[in-house]
Image (cartoon, rainbow, N blue to C red):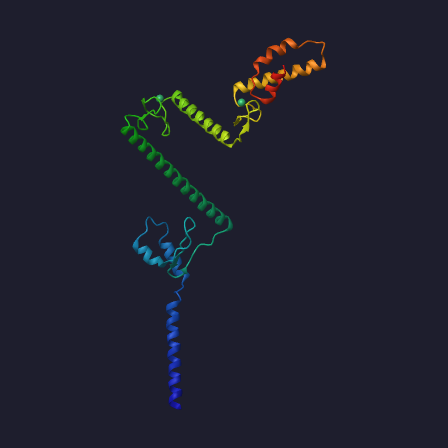
Length: 267
Ligand SMILES: [Zn+2]
Ligand SMILES: [Zn+2]
């Protein structure tokens, strides 16, 4: 048991010794007076010498970078001899100034990047233009042949198809005529056949107002209307003669429509 106690004590003592050594190693040797001396020695340095860095700086710790551009930041810790890690404390005004400066720098960088891209694009466009001009005999776009008149011409825009306003106008009117015809055909296809008022033939009227199949039937229908009017007039005013005009109209009306034929027979 005594042996065990001794062993225990021995271990405890060793642990104390080790802890002391470790803490000595861990804690930097703080000595502000010595640091002040060093600083005095290197007051107004003309350049940063290897010796100066070795004497003043203990170590520099570069931490892992954080965030992504443009807010990426990387912390750098500087440990000085005799005072350890030190970073100047900023006043509120200084902090504001630093932030403002950061923003100014970022803005300037952004502007420069923008300017660079703009200049690059301009240069690229200029180069492309020059290449095109060299290829196309001093013109921006290759020569084309007008599909209307067959003339060769240099287009001033890539999508130009015709040599002139006249040619494009012709093509356009051709297009509209064709379109109108298409629409007319479609409209006619949709119309239902009706019988002609005069001859009874089935036909497709172009509009709702048309009720006769041809110019001839239209004329006959008109004359029949006139005849009806004169007949009504004669009945109403037997003393006022419309006889002579009726005589003129009657021979013009053919026997195409049954009632017209009947009327003609009656006369
Ligand atoms: Zn043309
Ligand atoms: Zn008819």
